[in-house]
Length: 323
Ligand code: NAD
Image (spheres, rainbow, N blue to C red):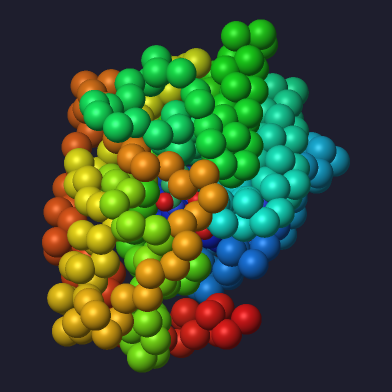
């Protein structure tokens, strides 16, 4: 199988590419081509371990560029779209880039896949499209009620996915996963931000009362879930992917501090809450579990390994943090 992975130089996309080429997710990987715009979040260092693999190739480019897609798309069996603007805080201060890539870019990619009759397409979405839920969990049939510009742009992209399936019969599915963690995550996101701050002797900024609840999913479990959707997902369907590990931000912070031997009162700096901050996310992922998915990584060990990775790989994150 020949894979095109858009946004494959980012956190999750690069994990998927490394795992594909290592044979972790599929046996029949003949080629993996990455198309990535290399925004601030894209990083060729994330792919350096596979750059010598003869099945791997890379091109810098934008999923909004229809002419480029005409050249890149033909010849692939599977397209997996990770390309997106992804940081909620950046979407609050500057929403337009989010609409361009997450909506227009998604449409332009779907259109190119339609023209070239790509056999299988998976679009990576997020649980943030559902909004916020106080109790219980969302199923894939729950309404999309996004609250941040990021979530709204991801919801719009997903509606285009649905429309391209309904209107043109495009064999596309989407995933809606919870918060990912693991190595190579850009140090603006909460776990790498907190860990690298503490390594540098800086306090960690905790939003509001810290009682917002997130479900944590190891990036490798997420990528296994994506592959299940690639191989066995139904065209036109969405799949929630959860980690089964709900924590308040206070609990998450306390675990990181304990692991790094720091005291709450000295190292946590409360800051004003994020605008429109969703209170709780929780997905019911029984649809993908029925296809054989289950998370393999426990959060305690996964967090330990992730902290150790940032401690051991300062040369990866320091240039990003300084820029
Ligand atoms: P990331 O920000 O680390 O990487 C995004 C990648 O997309 C970067 O390599 C960037 O250069 C590339 N990109 C951005 N705009 C592009 C464009 N116009 N054309 C081509 N490439 C472009 O993001 P991530 O955390 O790896 O997230 C990947 C996907 O997973 C996104 O769709 C995101 O919405 C979704 N997601 C992420 C999380 C999470 O916790 N990280 C949770 C739920 C869903």
